Image (tube, rainbow over all chains, first blue to last red; front, side):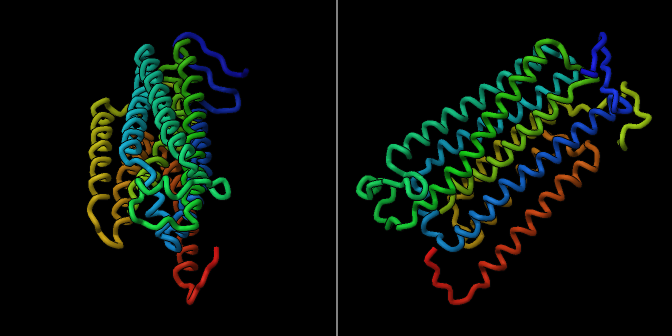
Length: 226
Length: 108
């Protein structure tokens, strides 16, 4: 390692002019990475828009199987986690180590609650046989209590292809984010962060907020379409 | 902020006050309630537009305050703006294609 810590100061890597230069460059790198994330999720959103236009009925029927209350609960949990993540950075900036660690711990907990609710939702759909594409095995008779007298479109499995692909990739991001937050939390416990060096907390925070941003758009698209 | 040349390592970053984070969090919760409430009102063809507009206000708050873009290097805004720009290009050309097809009898 070409970095070293001495007392309260932070020694930047030798290929940067200064610690500030290192901080700014690192953060730009994270933003560039977030661009690729936006374009990846963006492709799925554009696909959603196209097929929603061609086959509005499958999205109308498909969204009957998502429970908006669970979606709303997950939205609140994820917004809360973004708030505590922002506070994790805030307390790192102020060198209030124990508060920073507590905020990061709550953020991980919120991620776990989010995945727990996702598990309930997924297992409910899998139990009904509402799987994507050719794995779809739902018995129309068992779906009546969800859709009433609405006709089940023959291409309904396409809704679940979108549902599992979008929420699945998002869920993987939540898991990765939880791992990254655990990593910065352990480093925060060791007292590595303070006003002069908190770059990893900031970078991981940006990633976590992006995961929140994607969910902000997914929630109305998958749970509230009518 | 430039590229940091000549910046001392003692340079203090702008710390957004706790109260601002709290206000943004509460605003996001209120906007979530509005999202759910708006979904119960039928705006006709504008349903998706309304949902998308509310989501974009929420996204703006997260980007500006939680992600510190409001006080950040302008280059980061350009970076994120460029991805949104290319996403809009992708969107527009796909929409132009799909919406201008005539007499389609798709078996997709």
